[in-house]
Length: 333
Image (cartoon, rainbow, N blue to C red; front, side, top):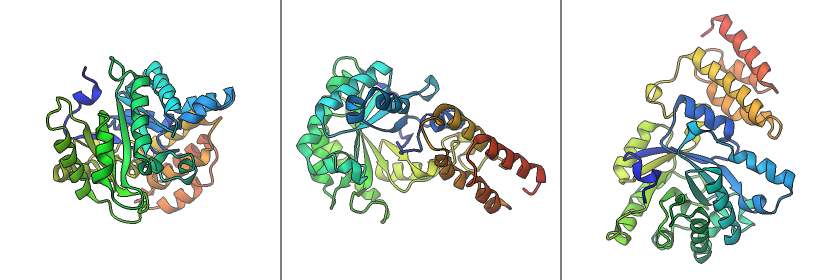
């Protein structure tokens, strides 16, 4: 059975799941101004969804809100418990997601203490069990939705040649390779030659398969132009862009692939984003989360530093709009 993964162009370009960034509000902005080929939710705790109080679960469920404009959209979960992974994969299918992704790369210590995220690289048998559990819950082998994995080259050292075959043996639809180890974090340049090696491993192990696992490269790519170059050099099926999306919901849009939108348009998109964040998430998330976007929305023009400094003091979308409209009326830009 074909899934959305089978219908993507080659190479394809996707948006990374980023905690407190790719929330419901920002994904809607991205879908409107520069939609990638696939969107991911923020990672969501499977343990929380299964064990939290009604109030806690309701809050986590807000991370799984999405609109039809965001399709195809993948729900990403983290856990080290196969039973709970199966439950949330079933939930994702019931909610209408197009796919399920298992986080096996997050270096956050709180998540690693749960045996999840990047820690799973050190427990390959458990990682394989989690993929099987997710596929059962998602109904992947019986007309349900596909399961994918996001991971790294290794934990303390690069073990791609041993680690990737464990994942591929479970035949996920796609594997995203963040081209660094957990130990390296983002302190070194991404090793894109290892993404190329991942493609080779896939081709060696699945040479007789009718449906090969897609390999998506990730790391240090900030624009679609860079993504196209890395895809060509590594032969990856797709490229995932992460931090380049901050304050740039138009990033994947063809009309802005080589240049920024006009300044007035850019700043009013920031206002729109602030209002949408407030509307959808203002009751459960701190408005301060918008400030990481303001740092990028507001840069590279006369008066940017002063405006940015003022925006960092705002607490509501109305305050943001007032500052930006006042700035635009001065004609400084």
